[in-house]
Figure 1 (spheres, helix red, strand yellow):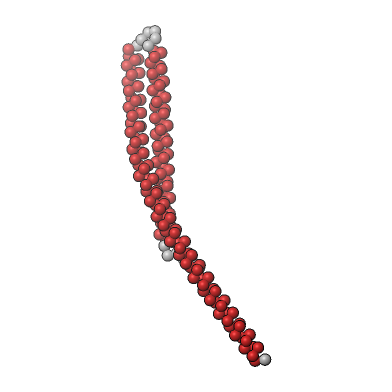
Figure 2: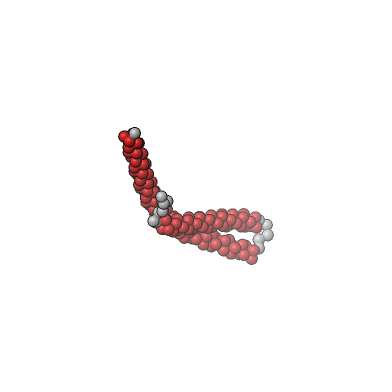
Length: 153
C-alpha cells in the first residue's frame, strides 16, 4: 500500500509562497503608512509649536528677520507635511493593490487545497474499498477452507 501523493503539491507550495509574499507586501505597505502618519503627526505638532512661538515673539521687541525666518520655516514644514500627505495617498493606493493581490493569492491557495482535500478523500475511499475487498476475500477463503474441513471429516 503506497501513501497519498498530491499531484499538484508543487503548485500548492508555489501558490503558498506567492500568498506569503503578498502578505509581506501588505505588511510592508501598512508599516510604511504608519510611519508616514507618525511623521505627519510630528509635522502637525511642530507647526503648532511654531505658531505658539510666533505668538510669544509678537509681544515686546519684534525682530522682522526672526519673523521672516520663522515664517519661512513654517512654510517649509507645511510643504513637508503636504508631501507626506501626498505620499500617504500613494501608499494607500499601493496598499489596496497589494491587498487585492493577497486576496487573489489566498483564493488560489484555497482552491488548490480543496482539490487536495477531494483527492485525499477519494484516495481514502479507494483504499477503504480495497481493504474491504481484501478482508472479504480473506473471509471467503477462510469460510471455504472451514467448510472444506467440515466436509472432509
